[in-house]
Image: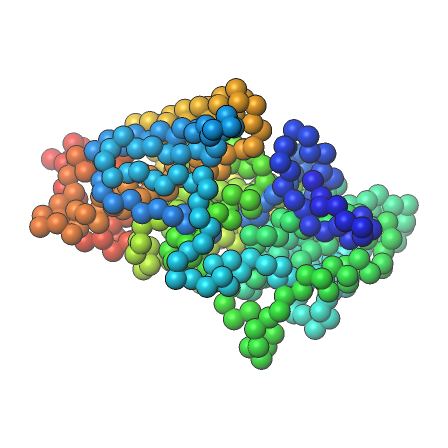
Length: 502
């Protein structure tokens, strides 16, 4: 649903998540993609009513305090006094695993200024139009501010292979900024344009978490640019209304980009993540990968470099990047401060190769098959639902064990309970993202809490009982645990007999 105003429709740029998705009008087709002389698009099935990208991190609230003897987790929907289902609350049968109920969470964080707590105001640092020229290829046609360095944006906002589809949307990174662009491809009777006019309209911001608000506006604008090329007044008005007040750094750049450190994650992730992805994003992710989610979870927790390949449309694949990042959420203080940030790059192309060469940990997606050959750039490669790695040390992690299947069964069970409760109570508000994020965050918290307690004890020996209490398989997860101890620098000794060895 688009916020109503007395402005012209093209100036209604802020999208508000509908209270009842069943009554929300179907949104117009999305746009966006990147790469060299290419550029068309066919309508993706997935839409972005809310939604921005991948995972900033963790929960604003909790810290688990002791290890549970039972690895089971059960999410229940709490029914409030007016009989409407509230957000799911995660209950833990073991002692010390009572995660705070996310309902009515106080959105303030003691010790932080209002500016530090929520600087998620409108901070649009650039707006631009990219076009495909039959002679020059992808090019920036127009932008504000005029002196903004947009090198490479012409390929990030119009993905390789987009000429085969009618429209798309795309999230990407440009330096320390994040971008959202909507792409559209319109047939025209023009020999000069070879029968098709392709454009993208996009924006840049220091953070991706509110970009989704302007999806509808960008979709309207890209269609407007296709029908009436060169009419930029709505974009000019948008920029004047939403432009960021950047700090005086002398170079016009934001001095620090969004980070996914434990500190940021602990204090802000959960409240804003609830509203920054499209409805159904998590459920689609779960249905698409199935049990393979547990494989991705281990790679995410180990901070591996994960690259997802998919042909256009790429918008839905950007959401898979987001969901992958959510798998690594931890809310325990001090955990992960010494490991690389799990950085969402969203859409990348060959122009990003140099930047990726220095990255220690990331999740990204691409439409360019050539990346599969560049094995020095990634640890894990995902093609459709096929998750693979060329690293021998990671091969054991590709095999699902009994504990993995049990965790996935519990996640599926909890989803069904939640969906059933919503259907029975007639509440169409989705809480799946809460359940999904809290499920993996609690799982991660449990693992690191146990490891920390063992490492701090007089006998820092990790036994099979400890491993089972963490919800892991003593044999099947041995290599995963060894890597986890090394990556996070946890001083504990794993002594589990390997039945395959004498």
